[in-house]
Amino acid sequence: MALFQHPSGFATTGMARSAIFFSLLFLISALLALLYAFGFLGLFLAALTATTLLIVFLLFHPRNQWLVANRSRVGGAQCVALTFDDGPDPMDTPKLLDLLRKKGVKATFFVVGKRAEQYPNIVRRTWAEGHLVANHTWSHYPLFCFLMPRRLRAEIERCTESIRHCCGFPPRFFRSPVGLRHPLLAPYLENAGLEYVSWSIRTLDTFTANPNVLAERILNKAANGDIILLHDHLPRGTDAMLEALPRVIDELRQRGFDFVLAGPREDAGGTLEPATCEPVP
Image (cartoon, rainbow, N blue to C red; front, side):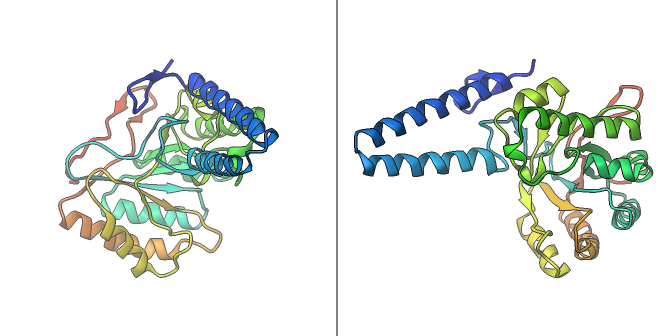
């Protein structure tokens, strides 16, 4: 069972972190009830506000390590990783793959299971061209952090099976919709043999229609080790991303950056291909 080294130095398993979360939630609830019952309304409101802010941070902050251990950066000198969520898309993902092949860049794709089942040939092509395919849940449920345990497990397992069907073996990495956390996510990921991957640059391409604005946002923030969050499927299309990406790739290369996968890639024979910075041929 995987251990997580908490920032305090205390190593815990995923199940232990979930148990700690629910225990603290119970104790805080009891404290709030006592404060209210004895008429300490000022303290009650202050404690309630602080508790709400803490829970929001734990469930919604993409890089916090308290509920789920995660990687938000890649190792090596002058490395960055491009990651794409929510695909595959029958129109935009092939365009993106063409672009990446032309530029000689490998990237990480967090695919939605039911979309992978609809377009398995795109997922197979993604893997065959050297990219990393990872789990982004089965349905991309928007309120992921509130799922019941049975549904949470199904979202993870069904996406894994969809990728296994496409590529011949299960994924090793996971990212939740919008980076949301769930109190039971850590033990479920451990049981599924998945590691959580977050990001250090959120490009906001979901809301950006101007490719120049998108490119500038990435180029102004990019630093060694960054994992960059983009999307290859959006309701309004990904034209801005597809137009901005060649400039981003070219300028980052001019600064001396290499592009790597967000984690090691396992081939069909079980051999790991490390995600290290290597010069592009």
